[in-house]
Image (cartoon, rainbow, N blue to C red):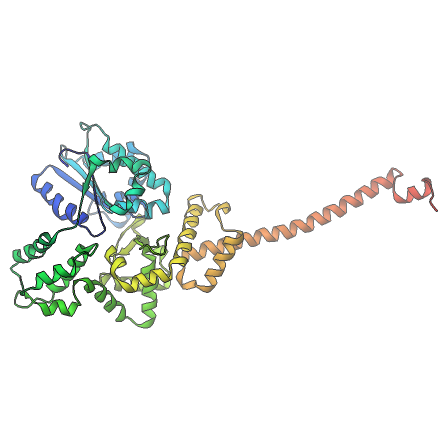
Length: 454
């Protein structure tokens, strides 16, 4: 980061990209001094995510809402507005360098692009402008992006292509056996905690060839920390967790099993809203940030319990509306029950994401009736609303009902128009007959004056 204006960390999910930046690079730069940091995930709206990260501390709720709106309006103006906001944010510390970290950059291709492709592209263009800015500019900005390796193909197309040029890549590979042992033993030794004989070797062996193993290890160590006795963690504690690979899934199952049957159903409805389904049945879905508008009203009171259980995390979005997301993608990949739920509801969720894309277009265009459902899409939506009403949020249902009402008004106008057309045709015929009689060309006149046929 001292030499390059943009660096992209590329590695597998759970490979340590976030840890490398958050627990490695940022503390080192902070110790050197002369740096300031902004760290965001794109989510559904990367501009709003950045606006939220730039809010000054100590603002009232009303001030936060107004300031966030103001920053959003400036950022979306384009690269010039983007730079103006960063210049304003850095004005109280002249001479410092600014590092903007965009973690989980793949969300630009999943959540953000699915929600509003134009804003996603505009954000990528703004980042590219920052990366190409004059190093002597008033604000010295560096960019660090963290991208899942399986999204490199998506990133090669469009304005993000320069971000993964070979000279800008920093590959983050999996830790080898010795590095894993060091990651386990080092922090524990710093806290004066030791592991029982063979325990560390057993944990490392359990993770062998396991993709995304760092989140699994992190979770297992967190659980083991709570079970230490006399500053020692023994093998029995790991056995109670079901091993490193099963610890996360077993914990999550325990949280759900402790709920009543009705609450388990509601928890399922909440959790599948926080996973963007894969287009192909054999692929794993991705984590999705969701506003409360995406969660059915009757389920929202359960959300705090899932947050307290660390299955879900929340943050503030636009207008300080709470946003929710799965605590870590490792849950999507490793928790068998959630994967089953997502697979069983995949077709419905893909349809629902399409519905919400059309809903977003309708709202973006001032609720113009041209963006409502009609015909077969409306019939399908009404059928799903009738069969699965609990799975649809108030916003989903409102859009479907607005489409139905518009279609019904159109049918009523059509019936009335048909009647008016029939009345108009009859009136025109009567008018033509009156004209014909007045000019002597009516049927009666023809019988009197025209040729007579036998």
